[in-house]
Length: 96
Image 1 (cartoon, rainbow, N blue to C red):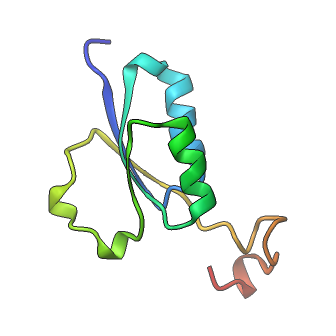
Image 2 (image 1 turned 30 degrees about the vertical axis):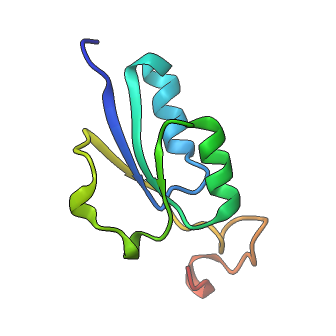
Image 3 (image 1 turned 180 degrees about the vertical axis):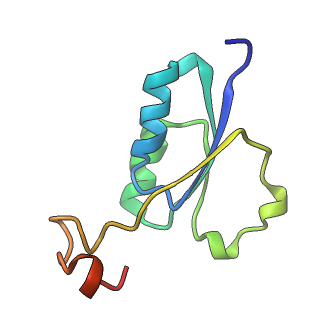
């Protein structure tokens, strides 16, 4: 690979997608450029796994024109209604 794959993440969660990209292409071939996540625990996990990534909070307060250009934008599915850690309301009854 000649250059790093640049990745940005929206609604990041704990960034399982980013971790998968890093494992698939190799640590030296993926650059995680930015992350949007408002949950403090998830942000802590992201900063631990990707310390050089620019971490933003609430995407609704961001100036998207200031973000660097990336090759891939990932996003995660809000899983609070599906997770065993959440209220388990599911896709139909859940609000998220």
